[in-house]
Length: 210
Image (cartoon, rainbow, N blue to C red; front, side, top):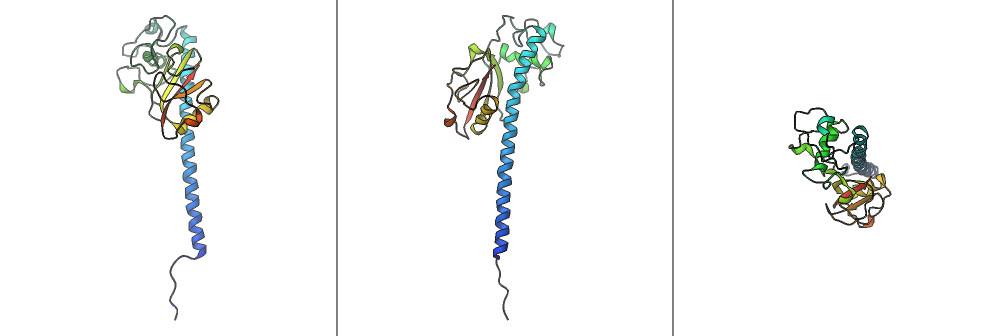
């Protein structure tokens, strides 16, 4: 009488290997979809702030943050509205924690261009991107990366390298050291980094001239 042999047959092994391959493929695809979604969210941040900037300017004939009549232009939020000096310049760096480039968020939110708190004392006041980095705007004279063009600079930081390359390709030309969007590893005063030198797991600052 023969005992039944234990173990996998070739067919069973083939089925197991196929399942493992499918799981791996689905995992990779899911990761790609998540990254694509995050890049899309980052691009939306840049586009939304650009629309808010020019929309505010068109509506009130003033720059958000710099608007010296913001308190008259905007609805009463129950907190102090911070007027600018009205010199047609949005003073401050993109990541300033006070002044006109900081108060810009209050103005564009009260005007209805962007959602979020209008209370500058709250931690949630400065918007965060999908990677947990900050988003902000400055005049081109305060550009944090050398070689940026445009009248205004929109910046966002803490972006992983694997996303920042795709973001530049989505927003500009895919060249992280040239064009309208530049990428650096410094918050202020950095130089653009070549696309081939971007490391997937490092974090970067991306700025767009508009």
